[in-house]
Image 1 (cartoon, rainbow, N blue to C red):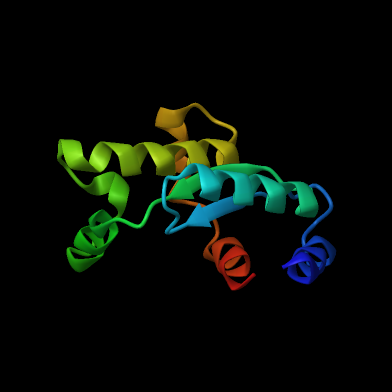
Image 2 (cartoon, rainbow, N blue to C red):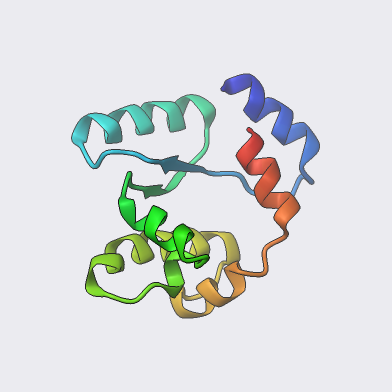
Length: 114
């Protein structure tokens, strides 16, 4: 993991910020401690966590993003995405989600491939 972060730092422009997002992470104290240890080792902030939820499968099966889903049971996951979008865009949560949809797919792919 540290090697991948070093490679990304070489590839990305010097002003480009990097952070960690936990994917399919259980909401447990053990996970949080492990994430903080990794963040400290890599010198990167943890900006969000996407839980292991069937909500994402439901949205994908309808060809929608999580933000586009309706219902109270989606609010927690939508809040997680809004916090990540806020960090990525530097905007307020409402504006960041709209702007998050326009982030370059190449940037997302680069981050996902790491």
